[in-house]
Image 1 (cartoon, rainbow, N blue to C red):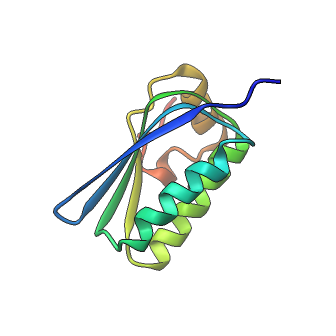
Image 2: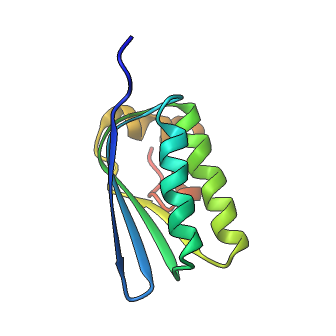
Length: 109
């Protein structure tokens, strides 16, 4: 069984944190993503954006991790959004669950 590869880059500028992810977010890599997002929240940015433009797959564990991080961010007064979903498989998860608008993505038909 191959391990899931998830890479990240984090940028901080003027009170905003942006996490750029690439690879796949699943049961094996969701904890890694959560750790990165939690570290960003610890720096107390005004806002946090999670860029998924280079993510080709996201399962329910990845979606759950994003929703829980959004909840933690809101509890700290930090706005969190997901941006740039480009893979159809990822967009489908957000559309089927209705989680897209909760995470700042436009509603899809």
